[in-house]
Length: 114
Image 1 (cartoon, rainbow, N blue to C red):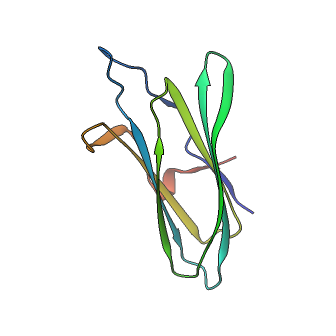
Image 2: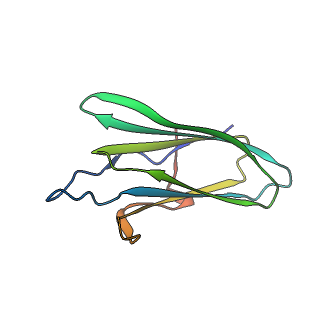
């Protein structure tokens, strides 16, 4: 089954403010059956990568799910283990005002296989 990643996003603070404070993930199930989704979020500090999000759920056929995760780290990455190649995932970083962070945007075609 597909194992996908956003890749590592650098999110270093500038004048005490990070570009993204949250990451919004949108998952679409274009399959004709329900699918299993596992989401894992990691933050990196130096050479240490630590998991801070682990969520597993079932997404019905034709359904869409949205999740919002804390992202105030120097670097972070999300990985997705999905039970069907028909699942599409996109992710957008947002600042504290809710504005999109262009550098932290991954559309379905850009989510990389691991």
